[in-house]
Image (cartoon, rainbow, N blue to C red; front, side):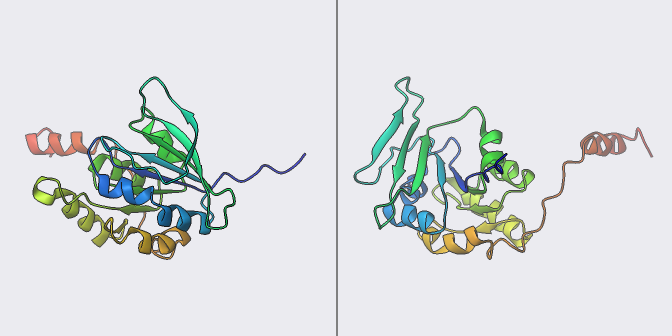
Length: 198
């Protein structure tokens, strides 16, 4: 029996439910896709939310969902014209945790739900805060978690430069493991605060 093939090296990029065109435009640009192909990434999944996608030139769509789900699959070629990265784009997904589990790496906006899902799945995480949002709360959260050693932070403009170190592990090799969920912890704090346990 032949040995099982290793899973493809895959990158998930998520913007949650918001509009973050600076990130989606960057991650579908030719320089970004070329950097992925050069690093050996085989699959790119982009969850793009409310953005209007700008696809690279000469994209051949392999699959396009006509039901309005906003999903398409295409291949992006590297500079040599060879088969490069398989790209799947989708507006939203009902299986976000599954997408994270299947990914080798995650690049995310700094939404707390997206961050926690990736950290709890123990995935290397590069966070790109959407600084156009009110109060810049995404940057505050991302920088606090970066200072704790849990993830790496970049900007849309710095993403292509940050990519090689992120993918080869040198920018994330020292990340702290995120603490596991402590079931019942909130109830214990509430009981203690209310005086039920002493």
